[in-house]
Length: 401
Ligand SMILES: *Cc1c(COP(=O)(O)O)cnc(C)c1O
Image 1 (cartoon, rainbow, N blue to C red):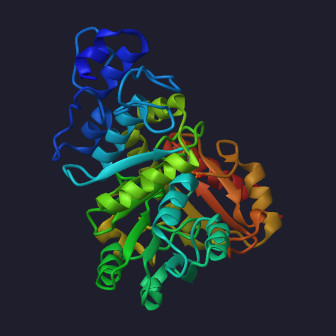
Image 2: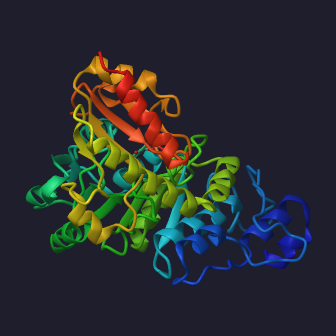
């Protein structure tokens, strides 16, 4: 069916025509703010909304031969199409060879890459200090006969275990330790051995770094965190530049059904409009918080890749344009850390990161991460920097034993 025939039917298929109409991509050299507010918008059409609303459809009118773009709601949805264009314009501006797929969560996206690319007998290299669900993924990969090797993010240590690998998975900056590895160097080494490279770009966001430009085959992320930034939806995405590999990722999404709902996809797209405002504000404040924490004698192990003397800063400065909203540090004891969290007024004691409201947690409460008992992961929100710094310092002052 032609676009116009579909549009002529009105109702929900009119929505389909609207969302599948031509994109109005932002110039590749536009600034990040311009790109964020316009990302994924369709061409202007008189009397149509600038960002079409969510399309709720399990199926679409489909007489005759079942060809796309919209057939059944697990395969494609016009609201995803616009969101996928938006994410693609941020992760891979100006690249025609990149394809974007959105998922129900970051783990859905992660699993889609790993489980669609790896077969029994393959070798996969993961970081040993990455996202806390990676050990679960490792155990699952191993039950399928895939060999998993791990090495730390720091010092590009994954280089040492690359021989014979089919896929290298990199997470930089790593969560929660905030170590950074050299994406370009690792990608070159992996490609020289015939391995594909995936980078978990959750913490940096596409405004912090663009893994595909640094040589990665896939940029994968949880959109649950700073990409959408309000702590109210789960989302994931994969951007890839290898057509065959992306076809396998798409097939995996179809068979597992790990798809986002139209409402979540639309909320995500709406949220991306403020990405540059949020990321700039949050990273500027994160640096101010880190600088304030550095002056405190009870704080050890302070990490923020944007601090000029942070061990990760040199590589971070080469490949990142913004250093993220997460600061990590250690207080002397578990009890002190708990009292500190309790004393904070502007910072919610909650997991996750990247939201407009600051959160912090004692990471050791989950088990799994190799961190000290007093280790705190602080996610800096969009509050006024002076207010947040004052709250953190006051909570440190009042939480001494
Ligand atoms: C949260 C997170 C994930 C998983 O994302 P979900 O949306 O929670 O499934 C993956 N990687 C990193 C680095 C994360 O922080």
